Amino acid sequence: MDPLFFKLVRVVNLTARPFHERVGREHQLTLNEWRTMAVLGAQPGLTASQVADQTGLDKMAVSRALAGLKRHRRVQCREDPTDQRRSRLHLTAAGKALHQTVGELGREREAALFAGVGADELARLGSTLDRLIASVSGDAETQAQAQAHAPAVARSRSSTGSSSEGSGRCV
Image (tube, rainbow, N blue to C red; front, side, top):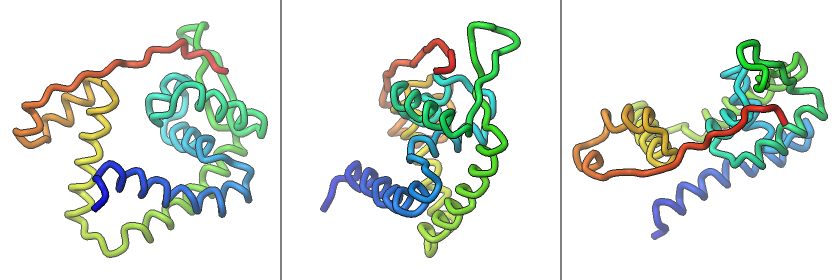
């Protein structure tokens, strides 16, 4: 029997493979570029460091993804009006259109992936994944929210982590 962590990694890999084969080639889009676009589509105006935090990608991977997205004119940087040392990232019109197209394909893939899984199971899985993300992210606020919903056994463990502070300048 495979360890649980390996199963989690395997699910991610197996669900990502069709992305590259179907979507990535057709739209000249890498998986990390898509992950970056997905975050910016949901939360426009983040900094590059915030995108890294939201995706779980390292800053170098986000930097490469942003370079590719800019090259294809899918993302643009705007100066932060409250702090000129920062740039905020936004999808362009082309980026928004691609986000909508690829997002629809993703929703179809998600529906197929979770077909036959009950609503209660999906809710528990979502809650468990939220707690795992909080545990590994080192985000104290997220950890506190997740632990409020965690079983007593999980609350007895202490977790440590480091937050990633970054410049927020567009790369």
